[in-house]
Length: 250
Length: 283
Image (cartoon, rainbow over the protein chains, first blue to last red):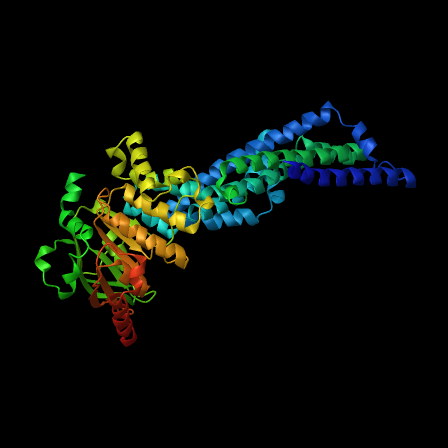
């Protein structure tokens, strides 16, 4: 517990130090506000408006994240049970992955409008690939002998899935969730850049038009915090679900 | 359960009576033996590689049999044929004289589920397949507890596999096999990954379990590449030739039951080891 607290203390102390130096440098050299606002200038513009926009982005990101992961995991289950499906669809999924979501975002806005759904879709596209690849890998990671054990005792396909494949895949699934938890925010913000009237992406864009750098900084910080929140939630879920990987470290 | 044991009775007597099988070397009483499993003319080819070459072998009810051979010669493949995980090439047959669900299996690796405790792991074979419907949850737990006690790990029932030593993990694997009450136990180099001390201890422990009348277990088929281990434990040693494997010879071990680790200094032990070693060289 104390070591954990100490581990937390180091980055916090470091960040506080950086912020103090930043504040001092801005004041000392009289750097113009539009170029680099001091931390206190940024803190001054944090308001309900910012939080509301952050809520919007989080909502889009979480929805895209959830839908993509459910869809991706189900697709992975399909792949491990049907070779034709895997052979046919996997290359397409890779093609989708190599297409930059930034290039797709304007199309998504044309198709889905400037509301939530174009952002949710952008977030989904970016989250889909990690979960698909990791789930396929995880569902196939079953030891050959474990499979033989289940077969020797005449376990059914369903039993092999629920009692062997699924738990075996969980560490892979959770690590994909961690990766995509931060990507989800990227997707939502990219979607907002292209066409929207709310969200952190919109706020960043708008403040750049007005050269309102403090607001821009506050929006960037909020995006980082949103990513951290999602990541933190997934990391704590992981610790609880994949408890057996921690046992030997204790 | 009674039906399972009926075949085992003659063997049980022998396992219990120390010197009663000292004549096994002379092969004078084949008619007394009932076969548990007959392997008849089994060949196995993977692609263009022939792994087994016309293997015929009768596993007798009540015996402790070792299958000895160099690594990668197809010994494990033979076990998988018996288990039904693989089928022999055309012309070969495996005849099970006991029901298939009476066959238990222990692999070289413990193959425990890391997300389950020791007791939950032992319950596994009882909670899948046809066994699942046969008993209630409480009965399953009771059997698992009994099995855990047999291997002396009751205190570790709620430990996860990663918290146990390699030897303990393998004992859990043995307990898991015993929980399903097998009359035949197939073991694929069960102690191959363990250190010498643990290995010898588990060798003797396994023999005790085999002789223990509380378990339905009466026949053990153990694949090993250790000559010493095979001589210490078995009644008969099946020597396999390198790939494509066939039965090279069957050696009877002239040692009495119950076996002790100290028997490894007996002249009979040493002479049997010497005999086998000579044959291995000739291969």
